[in-house]
Length: 103
Image (tube, rainbow, N blue to C red):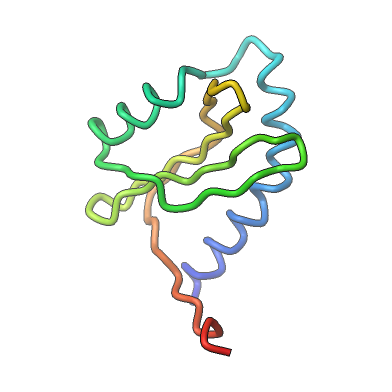
């Protein structure tokens, strides 16, 4: 249950981070690259693949890449033009099944 809460909190925080991430596109402290490059490197370096995607009112894609094998995860924000910036990363990724999906 603790992991479920952490994941829910992380997803909720993602919406708050989009404003910060939008600001990060204008800042100098960003780690950004074309989407294809980021996806490839996350897969090659950590075995991460895209697990979640959501879209903001700014037309940015917020994605979570993760590896079930290593437990690592990375959150990114991608602008419509394809520039992807790293927002956060961590360990102990765990998919939460939606027990209410059948309702």
